[in-house]
Length: 138
Image 1 (cartoon, helix red, strand yellow):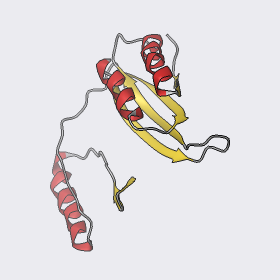
Image 2 (cartoon, helix red, strand yellow):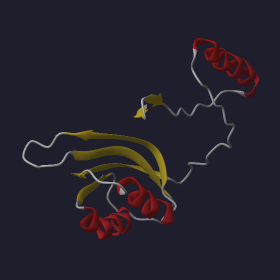
Image 3 (cartoon, one colour):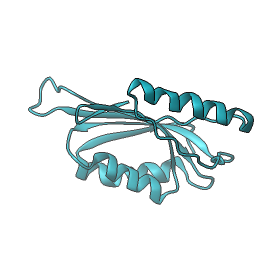
Image 4 (spheres, one colour):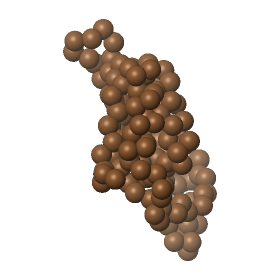
């Protein structure tokens, strides 16, 4: 969930058996009668075979473009973002707030944790953030 311009926005990914999809669709659309705007998009199943999950933690001074820059690196390496939570918190000893992110990412076969770490470290200096990846070491 996010708070955007006075509104709450949420994104949810679910998987249901085909025979239950129509019922779920009707139930979700019925929420509009309570004032909730619902948009449903059907997507293809993501093949996660051969992908290794790792945890990504990021912290640094808040500024525009952090998520965009990190996402560009992840996309260039065919890394799938499974989950991502972000927040902006006060920094006790700094003049600006801190941006924090934690997520789970899935690495494709053939991409080492070491290589992904090096690619993220290459942008972390420019972004003034610390990025940590945790998972099975190569």
